[in-house]
Image 1 (spheres, one colour):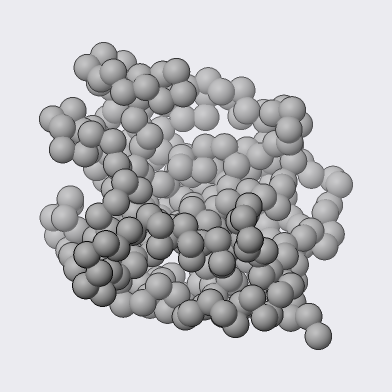
Image 2: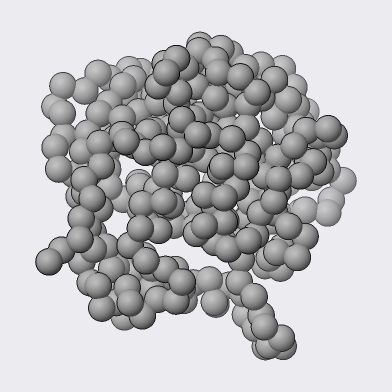
Length: 314
């Protein structure tokens, strides 16, 4: 008998998601799978157990292939499918989304749909150490809080909620820490931030820092109060536009990213929905950035990043 959970999902912030033509608004299952993979990698930690030849990335890729499937010999133990897709989606054209940018991205202002999470190959799942079907659901809950789907997901768009999940009503540093550690082990603690003094965060423990060329979660901030979406969007614009002089900064750097001199920002801005008040709580996640991490320019960049955090969680 197939094990299955049917999830009712609705957007919390506009979803800037589209199809293959990059124009028509469209919600796609691969976006959810991709987000689950990304946050699984960013939150994980793998021990060497004294093995001098231990290859962190090789271990990560091997386990990821077993949990989510890969192009080699591993089939995904689960399947994700839409159960019911409302054809009457409201669409919006988002122009000048944040700061001085002008992407002209089309997306959904609001959207609701049902999606199934089903166990397809239980025999494959049984062979994965410290993993079970319920952890897929728990991971999706965490994804809904830390980062959304679609374009501009790092900038607060694409956040969603799962109906009947208790993660939103219980959101707090301690609760979210336990939720994450329940999947990945005792990797995180609630302590003072390394970046903003006297500000408590969910922080990766020092003994669980991956030594590899891959971005991993360092700290997670949760906003102090519930706010309207308009204020959430305004704070994002202020934090990025006012405190981040992109042109001046990029003149100093020659790192190429998609034909533009820029860094991939190590900060995710997201939102947790509070049904009781119909408001949201900002959630900010800082990831380690693997590019030029010890350079003077990178340190300057991180200062700008912290201004974003300061604006969004106040």
